[in-house]
Amino acid sequence: MWSILFFIESILLGIGLAMDAFSVSLANGLNEPCMRKRKILAIAGVFAFFQFLMPLIGWSCVHTMAQLFAKFEKMIPWIALILLCFIGGKMLIEGVKKKDEDVCSCEPIAIAALTVQGIATSIDALSVGFTISEYGLWQALVACLLIGAVTFGICLGGVLLGRKVGTKLSNKASILGGVILIAIGIEIFLTGIF
Image 1 (cartoon, rainbow, N blue to C red):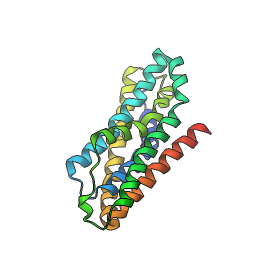
Image 2 (cartoon, rainbow, N blue to C red):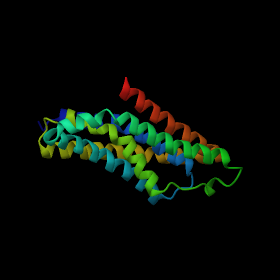
Image 3 (cartoon, rainbow, N blue to C red):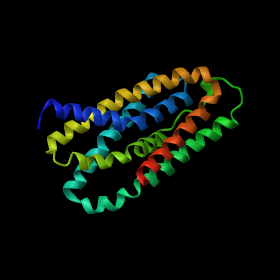
């Protein structure tokens, strides 16, 4: 099972799972264009951590309590929709209220909001635990580490890109970031329901 195909599949899974986190990272960069490097790394790290953790939890559920997870799986689209629309709506309202002011005076993202974003964008990764259920523990860990590493790189790029564009968009960036988060929440919801 330790073939080149195993690594390619894990990396491709990571790319697929990281797309929502990339968009939210982009929105965070748009919202806070003067973000420090330490915070950029922290944002990418939070998303990578949850993208690593959720498939591992899903894998554990398959091996321990699959029936409980099957009931919870139906709620995933609703949870993502509510969380991302709440955070996106808050960013949108702040962007509309904001007058022409310094782009670096915007409200930074709090760790609680970042954690909620990390959970909301990775909660659908729980189901990846089903796709890797035939893996042993070490293979599941390596696959999840690869998913987390890919997510880290993609989200790092998302925040940097958002920061760069955010300084050009001035205070309209928060509005755009909020719209992106709401759109991601709706997309996750519609994909999960249909």
